Length: 90
Image (cartoon, rainbow, N blue to C red; front, side, top):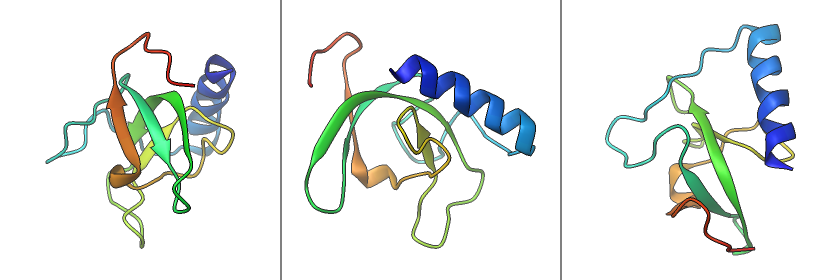
């Protein structure tokens, strides 16, 4: 499923002329990493692929795009936990 979200994200970035960068200064997160996402209610989902970063964090420090249903909505770095590629953490 993440492959579809990744394709949709890339098309959205191109169509909307969104600026996306590959690294997040001061963070161990990188584009292409697999991560688990934990929402504000403590529910964890994933693994998902990091697709990129906003050049400037949003009002609530959201700056990480990842492959999921709401790929256009960045999340906070503290909501993501890196996992090894191929890990089965469903």
